[in-house]
Image (cartoon, rainbow, N blue to C red; front, side, top):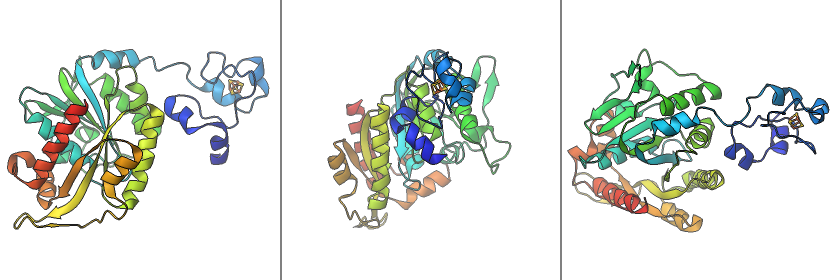
Length: 329
Ligand code: SF4
């Protein structure tokens, strides 16, 4: 199956239209188009190996996209937070970025946690025990502060340790509900925290937000080549999907001792690190955020690292990232 899919569909096809049926053979000459109303029914289809797939697949663009566009009409900026690999601190960065934006009381921030199988944002934001409210007008996100709210599947689970064992279509359905049914209201920034890699969740968000518009993506890496390797794929995904890369952030970039402030390199940038990769890929480098064990503790306790350690080197580095990001927007 895998080899025939590779033979019949390019990555660009899948990224630009994830709703397109996954064919088992190349489209023949005079094919009416697998997404057309005639798909699977025309005379050309009768001898085509894809006939059953095309005949049973949904046709046309998602009819609920206009509802999503309407729901997000008062959201000024939509930003994806991506990483090629897990464990680089993407969700931690999302939570820090949200707190950094929320320092300004004039700005309202939302986080949409699309990591359906590993939601960690509610824990980091100190709202793990909260649940969402459902009313006739939609789902209310949980408010962390007066100007910072979160929507995550974690806030809908019967208990903290319940596993979410969902396949693609179910995950995509929930992401659509997060965009269509949540009362996001007036937001300055909607930060979309995604799982690592390039999979169903990324394709769904990209296709559902095509009409509303995505301002761009912030890509997170650590300095080692093993992480950079996957970041190249993530940037390639953004290019194929037409998503602007707002910039690359190097996380865990050196360790600053909280006591003596001496900096050591834990993860060595053997091939130039994030800065080198940004140059190589011709994308902006937003900055390096040092490893600080107090960030992990703040996340464990669901506290704002910005409030607790505003003068730390990590906070200063994050402020720099935020400044460059705002300029890019
Ligand atoms: S079944 Fe019809 S629509 Fe589908 S690929 Fe074959 S010819 Fe095209």
